[in-house]
Image 1 (cartoon, rainbow, N blue to C red):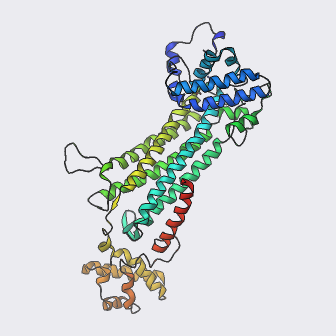
Image 2: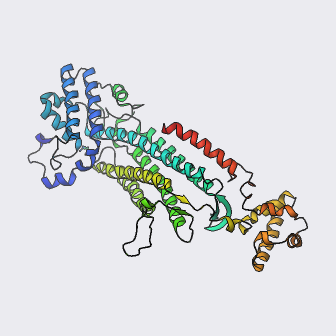
Image 3: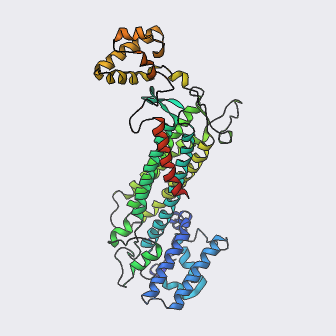
Length: 460
Ligand code: ARG
C-alpha cells in the first residue's frame, strides 16, 4: 500500500476490490514504464538520483515489463489499486531501496494521465492507418464501378442516377474528415503534463522539458491544476470516435439494404455472412449489422465521460478513474470495425447491370431534361412546370420518358428537338454531368486517382 502509515486500519478488502482500476489500466503498463523511465532520467539529471540508482531503476523497470510480457510477473489484481502502484511496488521488490525514490515529485494524478496521453497518441496512429486502409478498399471497389449506375436517393425516393463509385467516394470524404478529427485529438493529447504532480507542482526544480522530449511530447502544460483534471482531450477522442462509428453505421445500413432481395445490388463474400439455424436459404449480413449495433456503445462511452466531468470541482477527483474503460472500448470498437469493414468491402461482388434498364429513359432523368430546356433559353421555373406535366402524361400513358415520341414532346413545347433523347439514355446520363463534384465518370476517375496517390503515400 502506497499510503499506509497515516492509517490505523488496513484498507478494507471489499473497498479495494470496488475501487481498483487494475483490470482496466493494466493496458497502460508499457506506457507507465516509459513514463517512469523518463521521470527517473530527469531525477538523475537534477541530482535527486545517483547514476547508480538511476541505472538500477532503468534496468528494474525494463525487467518488470519483460517479466510481465512473458507472464512471469503476474501481479495479484486484488491487491493493487492500479497498475501504477503495482509497478512501483514491484520495482522496490526487484531493486531494493532505489525503487523508493522513483515517485519523487510525482503523483499518480499526473502519472496516470501522462500514460493515457502516450497511449492515445499511439492508438490514434493506428486508427489513422485503419481509416486509410478502409478508404483504400473503398477506392478499389470504386475504381471498377465508375460507370456502374445506381439510383441516387433523397428522402429514400429515387432522385437522380449516380454511379456506385460516386456513392463510395462520399464515404471516402467522410473518412477523411474522421482522420482530421482524430488528428485534432492527437494534437490535444500531445502535451506533457508530468511535473504537475498532485495538483500544484513541486518545490523540487524538475526539468519538465527534458521529460517531454524523452517521451516525444511537443509541448509542456502551463497550469498544474488544469493538467491533472483535464480530460477534454479524451472527450475529443471519443467524439471523433462517435462520428467515425456513425459513418460506419450509415455505410453498414446501406450494405444491408443493397444485399436484400429488394435491392439485389451487391453480394457480400460468403466468408463474411452467416446462415440461419432454421431457414436454410438465408445469408445474413451480420458483420455490418454488428458494426451498426456497436454504434450505441461508442456513443455511450462519450456520454459516460461527459457526465463524469460535469460538475467535477478542480482538480483531481477519484471519479476520473472512470475515464479509461470507455476510451479503450471505443478505440477497440472503432479499430476492429474499420478492419472488418475493409475486409468486407474487398469481398463485395456488384450486380453491375442491376439498374441499367430502370434508369434508361426513366423519370430519374427529368431534371436533366429541365436543364436541356434551360440551355435552350427556357426559364427554369417554366421548364420545371413543363417537365412536371410531361411526367404526369407519361405516367398516365404508362410510358418511360424515352418512349414518348418527339411529337408528344413538341405538344408540351415546340422547343424540343430530336436530340432530347441524348438526355434520356443510361449510357450518357453520367457523362452529361458537367459540374465539378458530380458523378461525371471522368471527374470521378480523376478523384479516385488523386485519393489513391494521397493514400498510397500514407500506407507505405
Ligand atoms: N487509479 C487512479 C486513476 O486511474 C490513479 C490516481 C489515483 N490518485 C489518487 N489520488 N488516489 O485515476
